[in-house]
Amino acid sequence: MSADVIVSGAGPVGLLTAALLPAGDAAHVHFPADGQGVNVGMQDAVNLAWKLVAEAKGRATPLITGGAASYDRERRPVAGSLAQNTQAQTALMTTFTPQGAAMRELMSTLLARPETNAHLAGLLSGLSVSYPAPDAGHPLDGHRVPDLHLPDGDTLLRRLRVDRFLLVDFTPAGEFDELGSPTVEVVPARPWSRLAAALVRPDGHLARAWNTADAHQIRAALTDWGAPDSTRPPGRSLLPLTKGRPPPCPSPKKRSPTSARNAWPASRPSRQTGSPTSPRS
Ligand SMILES: Cc1cc2nc3c(=O)[nH]c(=O)nc-3n(C[C@H](O)[C@H](O)[C@H](O)COP(=O)(O)OP(=O)(O)OC[C@H]3O[C@@H](n4cnc5c(N)ncnc54)[C@H](O)[C@@H]3O)c2cc1C
Image (cartoon, rainbow, N blue to C red; front, side, top):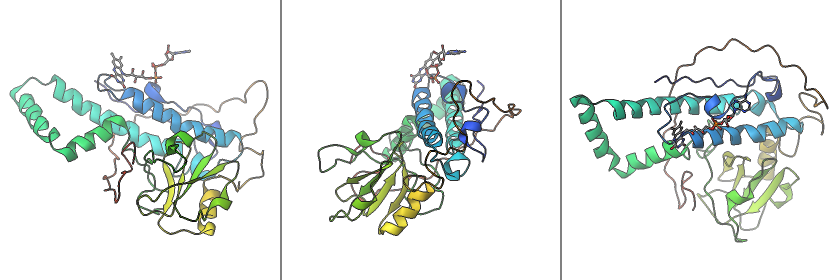
């Protein structure tokens, strides 16, 4: 079974000028019966959607159009991991030699161990995906946030919107309330994981987390991510949107096969209830 990865992302000029932004099965070819295609495909789309919205509204910064947090840089390793682990599963399912049977027996033993089980559950569900933190800040940066219960009765993931970030304010006094804007909703929350504040991307991953923070630091992060303080004047996009016919696409680059690689980071233990990979705290 082939396991090709053909994700092609945007260059530094901007998402909307990319020749091709495939998602789902169009972006990765793999054995279908491993129960991952839908999860990975939907997460491709969710990763891409908010970046396209930011670009269309003229708020996309180089960090997300062609930098460390671009669609290509974040999702290509996930596609590679998908290709790799489905190949491993295929080998386990289709090898009927004594060696294959011994390997299945060994895997069954390992699967009974909670930590192996949790690792594979995170892998297959996609919930353990953690994007490399652009500026190596807090250890939780890049992780998916859990669906924290909020003091107002709502839960955190229900507040996500494709066109705004969440600034989760864990301080008892609500110190960061003033940082709200049309592109940033400040969400008061009960203490979690010793954080003072967390900037959550529209796709539910942590852009930045801080154990101690001040408004200046947070404003700088908001600027990096293009949240309220756009680096460009409002309404000006990297690629001006035109009515009618879209601008012609640049010639597609020759596609080269990409080797699958496993870029899964080591899982990090949670320090309080609600690990970054668990659905709820
Ligand atoms: C037998 C089988 C079992 C599977 N089991 C699982 C499972 O248990 N769990 C799991 O997560 N995944 C499973 N998968 C994989 C999962 O179905 C796919 O990963 C998922 O459907 C991919 O979604 P997608 O939107 O990327 O592509 P698709 O679901 O293929 O959607 C693409 C759509 O685009 C349409 N289209 C194509 N060309 C054009 C065109 N030129 N113009 C307009 N429309 C077009 C197609 O008709 C189709 O509706 C299985 C797949 C198979 C085949």
